[in-house]
Image (cartoon, rainbow, N blue to C red):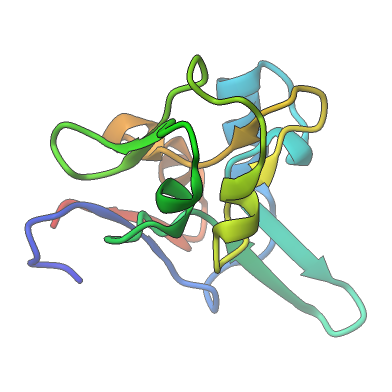
Length: 140
């Protein structure tokens, strides 16, 4: 959707080589540990079918995760470019995880809270480190 004026993270599934650099960098930068289960972007591998799929928050216009949150912990940023999770308001009910039609809101493996992409506040590290350009930040 280039030209819409709204920046977005573009995913090109067919370009991805499944190196998982995006997961490693995301989890390390955001959680301080290199672990796919801590990443806000996930690369699902199918070694038998030689296929893989990148899953990341699509920053939906009418976000089901935000609507499902009983505490109002997921809100649109002031500039309207991303959905932010207020961890202080979040009670860990995981209604957002269940509501996301794309499976892009994840359960934190050790804490009672969800994890989801917030585009690193408009500077997504995953797009910067992707060697294939499968993740690309479009300024709009």
